[in-house]
Image (cartoon, rainbow, N blue to C red):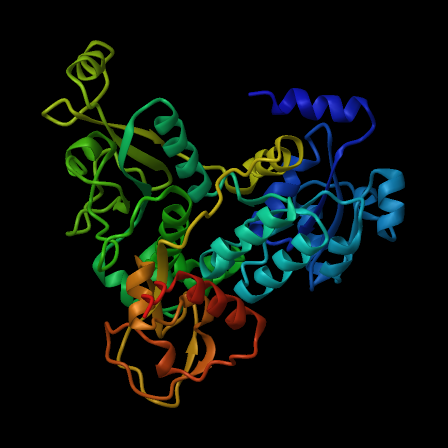
Length: 443
């Protein structure tokens, strides 16, 4: 509860926390909107492959043009303004920048940027949860070895869940389940970019005018993004994914203790829709939760005395947050990494994976279109099951041709596709898989 005071001290000393941002999309724009109002924080550089789009974003969020007119990083450091560049590696190579914020959403790019940031001794806030789930435990271990911080992004749901779980555990409670809410029906797993707007109640024209990307929004709807986020939470907290994927039970906040009573440490996403499409009463569509156990009679009596909502037995209770503010809250991660050298959530082991799963019958020769596309969605399963199956992670399922057919509902395996084993993302993933394999018994 001292980050604001610590930032003010850096401001007063004329030494603000220096930040480089990669990607000026929605999440990055939200962070930048808040960062310009945060004392003790200086966004020195923004890297984006489309600088006109980045300038449009900065104008839209209210940055004065002079604020992002620094011609280079040296000028930005001197003036307190911000330089725009297409060269993300220039941010990593600048020894005066302390924290890199990676929010491209592209798994391979995220891994490349994380490795470069770590090599240059920088803290990295990984908004790119796709990259984190693909290889986060390995990246986090490399950051620890280098003495830098590798952190989840505060404001995004995985980090907020980690915060609630950590708070409850620090208070002595056993957490039996944790996760988030979303809008879900089973048929959404087959949704494609061509059908997505109907599920959201929007016309294609409305979506176009809103600048909404159909493949990205389809990833939110078809279960992939939920799977990615739950795998990240599992990897950071020790909670486990269900063996055959998330169940998405319909559940309002008032029913959380009842629905998860008796659970033994799982991640799960709750649906804001009943299976017949009716809205759930007290839904948590935009929020996060954790269910915990009162393990003694005295603790359960305290629950009752202070109005804590529990299951009928009085043993299980829930804590939740109804909203998350996405990039508007990201400054907490930046400040925590730079000033406390502490992540706001971080993978410490590979426990959850997100396996590419066929939305329809897929034929040999077809080229997978990745997360949010028309061909596969991402199912969150235990990492050891993924390893045993040789599952293709959703983060590697874009632009790869199928060598053999896969039936609808089947998990696509690495043997089903022609992967480029020389690519950096594949090599890093393979290294993480190898490290997770059980050691062979001594002969």
